[in-house]
Every structure is written in structure tokens, then in C-alpha cells.
Length: 279
Image (tube, rainbow, N blue to C red; front, top):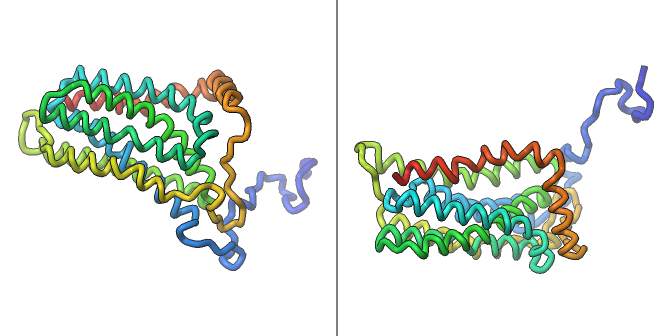
């Protein structure tokens, strides 16, 4: 017996796949310019992710090169993650004024000052710039996470979304691999705390400083060309205060509360485990 309410083309009663998620034949796809395509834009977001949070993770996994004290790095991480929650909470209101592209660029700005703080601490013993850089990093990072996730979900065609997500996230993980490789190279042949040379920090600063400029290469949603012919719309039209209220309600939904344990598990290593490498 066929359950009522199912289309005739699915007589078995089995759940069917949304056909918009199936890649159409090449001759049925809309032509797009390569620099307007969804994958080009995902590449730009991925490069921003590598140059900013990816390199941040690489530095954090080095424990500031073995030179900064664990107490200082703990304090810096506490400032960064606390402000990150706040700025991410307010990010939709910010996007109302500057758009998702402006939010991505803004989100890249605060990473280089933190790297500069680690460099001055590593070389001159300066501590205040580490804490100031951590604050700036936290403010921008929360906006960065919100912006890049919005772009990664909205820009690709439905059949490209899974590939785009994996491609985008691989850039950040490459930054983690870079930090691990440097740490292994420092400590593979000795049992003492290693120390990154000043040149390595200068390279990290240069890469992170390039992040905002890479963000300028991103296409605004209205300029993106998708192979399914659909336009990308990430415009926030309602009052920013309504966005903040909607976000607040979301924090108390059952689904979000059930995710808290997994969220905590995902970021625990970044805020705690890497401190061990600073000792």
C-alpha cells in the first residue's frame, strides 16, 4: 500500500532526494565567470581561514614558541574566547551595516596584532601587547566565524555544498598541521623546551596581515554567479535589535543546548591543551 500524500513518481513510499541537490548535466548548467563562481569565493574564504585562524592555531599550538609563560597565554586565551562569544553574538547586527564581505574583512583584522604581541613577548619580554592583541583578536574572530560560515553555506550550489565545506575547512586544518610540523621539528631531537626563531613569528605576522587584503577579493553576494542560476541573498533587512533578540532565543533552544557539549569538546584543545606546549 502506498502511503497517502506521496507523489506518484515515488510509488514505493521511500523517502526521496531533493532534486536540487543533484548536479544537472553540463549543458543544463548556467555559464559562470571563474572569478564570480562559488568555488572561487570558497577559495578566498579558505585562504582567509588559513591566514587568520589557521595561523593563530599554529602559533597557539607552539605555546608562543616556548618563550611565553603559561599564565600569560592562559590569560590571553581567556580574553580571546570570552570576547569571541560576545562579538559572534552581535555579528548579525554588524552585518546589517557592513554586509557579509565587510564582516569577513573586519574579522581578519585582529589576528595580526596578537601575533605581533607574541613576537614582542618572545623577543623583548613585553606582555601588555599580548593581552591587547588577544582582545582585538577575540573581537574580530567572533565576527569572522559568523561571516565565513554564512558564506560557506550560502554561496555554493546545493550539489557543491559538501565539497565546498570540506575544501574550506581544509585550509584551517593546514594551519594546524603547519604548527604541529614546526613543533615536531623543534623538539624531535632533544628533550628541552624549543623556541621558535623571531623570523618564524615575522612570517606568521605577514601571513595574518595579508588576511584582510585577501578578503577584498571576495565577491559580494549579489555578484556571485552560481551554476544553478540562483542569486545569493545574505541581506539582513530587519532591525539589528530584532536580530539580537532572535539570536538570544536560539541560545535557549533544545537543539542548541544539546550541542554545547560538542562545542566545548571542539574548542577545549585550543584553549587548554596547547598551553601544555608553553611549559
